[in-house]
Image (cartoon, rainbow, N blue to C red; front, side):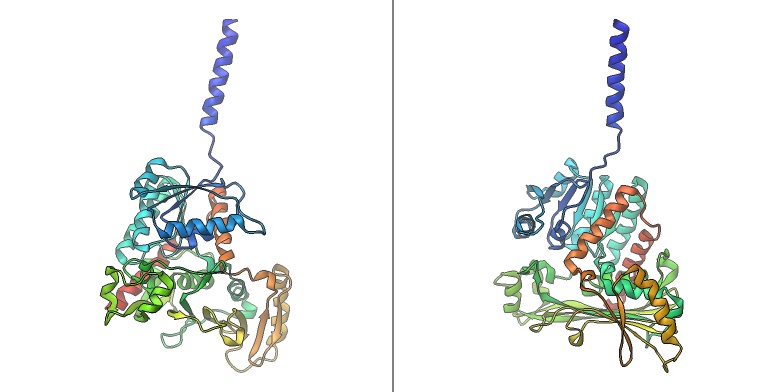
Length: 453
C-alpha cells in the first residue's frame, strides 16, 4: 500500500514539473506609455491565441485617456466589436512597475520616440518581446543602443520587430511583384544622384482624422527632440520599402552596402491657432519655445530628403509635412522603380483621387513586341491576385485593382501584428529582417547627421 501511494505521489509530482516546463503558448500583451494612436490600432481587432486582457502601464494624463477611449470605441462598435479588457497601472513609476511585474510576454510601444529606444532596451533586458511603432531610433546615439538591443534579443531568443504597415499596401505589393518578373521589368537600373533608380516621396498632414474622429496630437509630436525630425520619422517607411522591393529577401550589411551621399532638412511653420486646433492647448510648452518665431509661429523640422546608394543602386527618399490637406484631398505618395524594360510608378494625387494607383510605363520608344510578353506574364500575377487587370493608357498601362484588396492604413496594423505573432509562435522570422532593420535605421540616422551639417 505504501509503495502504491509513493508511486502516485511521484507521478503527480512529475506531472506538475512537466506542466511547469511547458512553453507558454498564450500571447499576453503589455502596452507601455501609449502616446501615439498607433498603439490602439494594434488592438483594432482580436487575434487567435492572444489573451483579451492587456496590461497598460503609463503616467496619468490625456495621452493614456485618449488611448483607452480608442480601445473602448473598438469594443463598442456595432460591427464585429473587439473585447479587450484593459488592466491599467497609472503612476510615474510605470516603467519600473512593468519591468518588475512582467504580466505579459509582448510589449507594444507607440509614443514618444525620445523614450522609445530605452523602453526597447529595458524590455528586452527583462526578457519581453517587443513590437514597436516606427521609428525605433531618432539619432545616432539611439542607433548604437538599438544594435545592442538586437544582440540581446538574439541571445535571449526574443523578437524585436517594428511596425512597417506600408508593406501591406496593395499597390506597393504589386509594384514589388512586378519588379520580380524579369520579362516584364527587366533589371533594376543603377541610376545616378540626379536621376535615382528608385524614388519614394510622401506628403503628410498634422491635422487628420483617425477612426472617424479628428486626431488630437500631443504637443511633443511637434518637438523634433521627442518625435524626431521628419528625416528619421516617416522616411523609415520609405527606406524600408526600397530595401524590401529592390532586394527582396536579401540581408543587407549597413557597413558595406549603404553610402549616404547627401541629405537636407527644412521646417514647416505652424501658427499658434493651428497648434491649438490639434493639441487643444492655449500656448506653446516651454520645450517648444526654442522652435518658435515671434512667439506665435512654430517651426517644425518635419521635412527631409536623403540621397544614397544601396548595393550600388542610387535611391532617394523625401518626406514633407503640411498642416492640413485641402478639402477632399489627403496624404500623398509617389514611388518609381526604374527597370530596363519598364518603369513601375505609384501616383497618389488629384488625378488618382488621392488613392494610390500603379502604372507601367516604358522608359524609351515603345517596343511593339513588349505588350504581348507583358500580357502573358501578367497572368502569373493574376493567379496570385485574382481580379487585377491591365488597362491601356497613353503612356503605358494602369494596374486596376479590386476594392477588396484596398484595406486602408488602419487595417494594415492588424496585418503587421498578425505577421509578428506568426513569427513569435513559429519561430520563423526571416534571417534578413534584423540586419535590414539595422540597415534602415543606419540610413535614416546617418541622413540626419549629414542634414545637420
